[in-house]
Length: 469
Image (cartoon, rainbow, N blue to C red; front, side, top):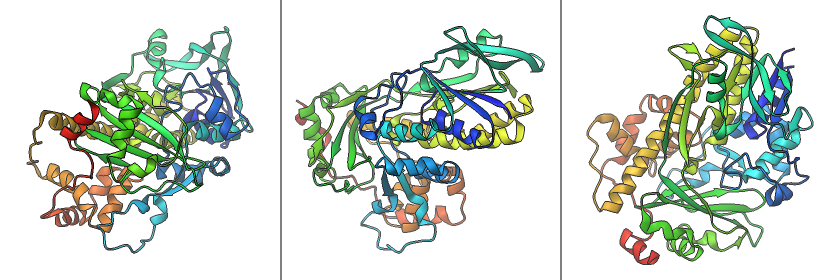
């Protein structure tokens, strides 16, 4: 039995720890925030203090890929989510009315998610973990301990040191400390190379509000969960206990729309969008929650095909974090946790092999999702800039770009193309795998031929500016 330390007691840290504990390892979780796990989901929403999680009460969503991983790796966590009031949401209810073929397909159940507000999701995960793991809350890790090197010139992490001066030894340390992880500095402090790091501001500001049904009925979504207008977007997400969130996000460089932070202007904007206005007909349970300066950031713990250290790996947001508009963080973290479990099963006795295999797994399964998110962020930012400046985006010229432009058009008319599109948005299948399927590109181009992307009903840029005045 190996001893494993997991740094960070959030959703991904605890999920990773529970997966490894179920393989027979002695796992200890070290969490900086001291607050104990609440006694109920409502207490978690109302009072749980998680200062180490910067977006704790911002909108979150667990994509179907995450639900499937809980089902296969942590079924008791999924059961706890349902007991906490999590919503079961079928993505195929978003099938556009313009699609005539409504017949079900084998495998449609894969588009179902189980989701809720972040504090409630974390409460469910933590309530299960506290019954299975040693979770030490209120412990701050300040650095790494080293042991005999497993590879020439590569430091080996053999544990951690806490702010109380305690030295904790481990066969493997897992960094699940999220966006604020200080791992690069720690690695440099033990003589290691800094990880490869890339970061850019997504360039969006988010203004969100939560609602609870006044009738006890779940929210009805009449458009996709994410709807792009010319110079703003609306993200609507189902929550637990008949709650939901509505988020308006705009470009950080568009001062004319900064008024959206004001409740009156925010409400007027959403009310002016016919497919979203009905979501305001409920009981508000928050004021406007704003969020900006969100970085898309990627780290790779291997430089020149050599691990920067052995004995330590990073999962979830400690490895890479993405902007919240696509809601991918939780599902990507669970994909990473499951991959880490597989790597540990195969290589835990060989530190160099484990570090190498974890890097390869991460690059194969997770990095494509990160790159895809960056691509979508940049495309959306370019579209908003064009709308602000009153110009059209250039027509795509190369074949791949034409297919990408046709995809969101075709998915509104072809049921199988819609499912292919949804596989990507639900993080079920990597985009390159979906697009390589025989006949799919032809189906996309055929369904889009002679059609244009239909703009959702809502205020024009000029109307929006008058509304914000």
